[in-house]
Image 1 (cartoon, rainbow, N blue to C red):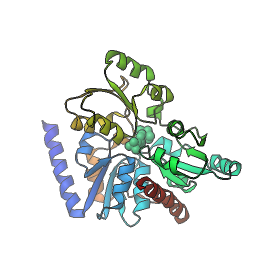
Image 2: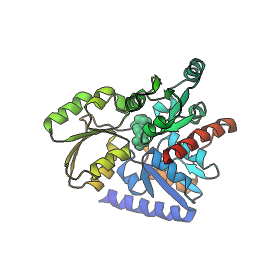
Image 3: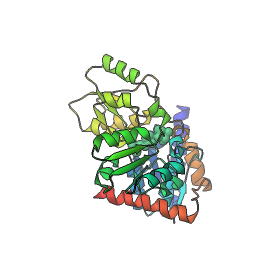
Image 4: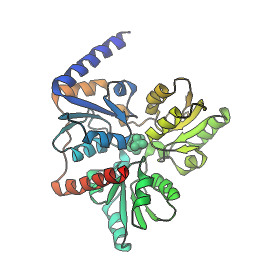
Length: 311
Ligand code: 13P
Ligand code: SF4
């Protein structure tokens, strides 16, 4: 009870400061439920990058990991983007070297370097187009290039390749620790316990999980699938536990099962209401961009994604 009262005070203070400063709060589905609950917009990486562009507020508080805040700042250089917890970083966003890109460019004349949005601005600046898990298949399908270097995530790359068999893919060995080390055995055991449950997973999962899935999609795709299939009432979920907040809002009648080793994104999970309150009060932890040449190029790859995804 005391905890609820304390949160109530914090939430009121967050609302007050947000109005006073004309700030908007964006949150990814993987952050804690109490943080999602105070956000103005909650979504997957694609939605959050799109929404940031159309907002009038001069201050964006981004409850997510570094590459998300950095992308919002690249697309909105005149706005202040505040990160409630600046050490919340996605390890996969660093898992590729420039040499990998240079070698592939030397080898293939018509190469397109396709970069998952889970990457630093510098990595985006080496690339031709950005994608998220919500639009990767559509964008890669429509590229004129035959040869695709997909960075940094190998699992998403293999999934996209399976959907676009007429292109030739070059892979990079990056991965999300949370999805890579999720246990296919634990998912299979859940399926044995709940044979009628549909298995919904994120394409960052390892291939053993992808093989047994009924649906593969982004976080918002998974939430939408459950909401739009009222005939199903049990789901096994292969992604980070944070999605439960929206899954249960969309389908209060359904049952959701997660692997026994609960998948938590340790970085997203660092963000608390206190951190949000602190940045609203102090203006600390504003995203700073790298040098202009890198930013101009990185912004181009993001803008190209927004254009191609909208076609
Ligand atoms: P979504 O774009 O599907 O939300 O995924 C982001 C992410 O980091 C998955 O691990
Ligand atoms: Fe990065 Fe994985 Fe966390 Fe997504 S779940 S932000 S890919 S570490």
